Length: 437
Image (cartoon, rainbow, N blue to C red; front, top):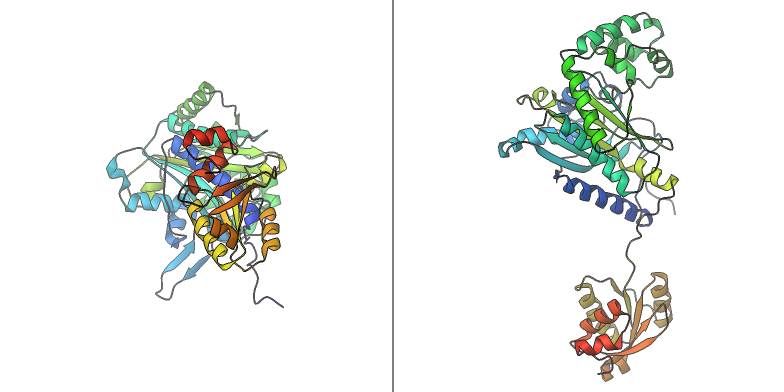
């Protein structure tokens, strides 16, 4: 029959056959974040549109073309989050996390939304892992978040991924660079796209990030920001490089990196892989909290695209840890047997093992086929004879060997010992849990 509806264009279902990959990668991300002292923050999927206008920048492609914005029945102007930093910064400020002292270190795994054409590793709904540090102006903080991102790639054994870094200056030195860009792009004004016409006066650096081919081609010969940054920005950038050199993280200075959001200052960086392009990007945004109404707070962080990372792992043939399989399947072939199977299955689950029993009314042969299908390590069949005798045969599904096990109060201890020790009788005797007793 025809489905009533299907998934929305630009959104993907993550099915059980793939969800374990997400869980594996997310566990590594959480583990590495925690090892660097970062704690999780979760923010709403929608925010007041003004938040993104002020933080992301009203001259960016995101705000001008890509945000999912709407007006509620109460008249509020809201938008689905297009990235994770703005919401995390708003939450930090609103809940006064700074009262506990600096630095504040947070991480998140969140869905984001941008209304754009589906592209490689980016749907309209995509998922982002991010780490944010607030209250740290030192170049050591920049190096720390870069190291944290790099550690995830190391843990996943990613190959041929390169770190590119740049400094885009600060509010003190950036006006000189803007003037140079205005002069350069002004000579090509008739060749720029319509959107870049408005950017030329308001924020010419955004032209460097334009996705239109004609604008990108013109931007290749534009002045580079490193020729215009002030001594403070130069010293900060040198400090970042010195830290990376100290821990043997290789990098390339790429003066063309500007990042796509207006809140960036000083250090910006990207991790780039030849198979997928940019996998992770970030930098410093010292003016963001002040822009949102708080006190000046040096801040920095990065966002990592989970979809694009998973594509990279697949292209590099990196195998991810498979999800755990069923430890035991207990089949019931009578009313008493089914009830006992249900009881024992629940008890084994309480011991943090994976156990299954029949819940749809199959006969014995279909149950055993299902046990094979889910790759159960052990199986047991319970009928009236087993219930009356108080004993049943525990079968190792790989070797085919069977052992008779009493169905008494020590059943769970016996099964766990057999599971862990491969039915080692000597080990069982030491426990006083002889199989045949």
